Length: 496
Image (cartoon, rainbow, N blue to C red; front, side, top):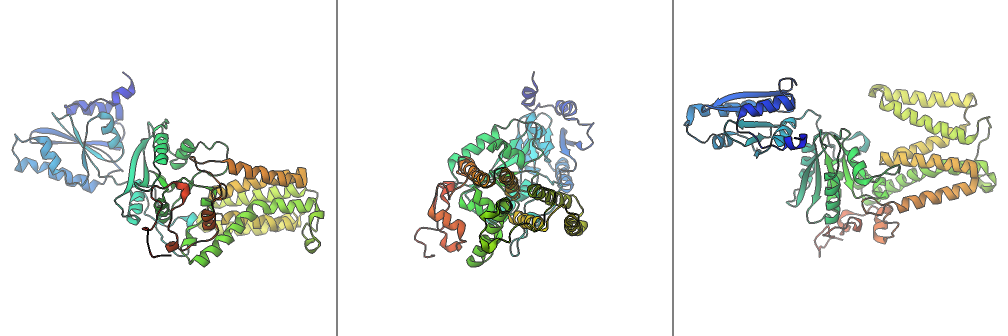
């Protein structure tokens, strides 16, 4: 018989058969973290299976005390299943009928109680996963706002969301992904708001994942559901902030939570979802709009500043007389495009080094590398000063991009544009920008136009991208998520 058919066997009534199965198939007695506690309750054998490190030992001891006390107060003729079920003092006790589910629950950190002569086991949720407490994400910090962020525990992550949306229509559907890892993946949404077609697509895509495990968590899930291929532009948005996830759920988005991942996936998303930041909504509309426009300038600079400057270098006649000073005053034997690419890659080296360097040293190392290496490179004639200046400005623009994935995609597009400009000058710049624009416009993420609301153009949606509107004035949910209920505030509300 195949392995899958064996796993679907019903639970035997003999606890000895269950123990043999756990020894032969699961490694009981070999793996040090798997254990069984054997009890005698009213002359019946009761076994408790657990996995050390994933359970809260205090709760297990309390449950064992409750079961042992049955010998002193109950009759031997009583129904052992009902007695044990009633004396398991825990808020989450459920029956399980198959050996496959029994093993999965044990390896998930829950304890399973089996009784001799009973073909049903009881699962008690006493999980206590190792991990850190919620704290502010390093990549999404704000000056003013919540300091709790998602962690690697899916239970804590859904609780952080539930704390912000206390609506009876908030749903968290659990799906187990991975034949071997059996990782818990949850879909969070508002039942009366989220698009039914999107929910069906996500359910089918998640259930269709056939892989032994997803140790890389949400990133692996993304690659299965959006099938991005070699496209560098992010098709979903990640966030580690619970308030950002809750805000998107209220708009009608669907959130994917993955156990062991400190970030969640927001679907569907467009290009403009990746250029907004929580800080814009923690300030007044005027300040939020100013911050947003400043960020837009930085993102645009990170994308086209270097190719545009290179174009002026190779074709100085394009410059008006008023800004004819733009361009290198000194010349080296190394082509300017090579200098730009080397300097751009140098910043990427510094970023990688800072990630892998202990925190107390990373700041000092970055400053020393940026100042000393840059200055020495200029002194020896490797770079001209203007290259360092414009590469630094473009690098700052990359770091102002809220989405790390979009920042890297813009860097790749920037390098491609520089190469086209170096070979084909003005036609290369124009054709490169046009092809990149057409490429982005043609993208669709989960049947959602990637460049909405610019194309297809929607005036109200585009206005909300440009201007951070006050929450009382945002009466409608974005049409791009196809919400069942478009009104964020009750119709007839006096708020304007």
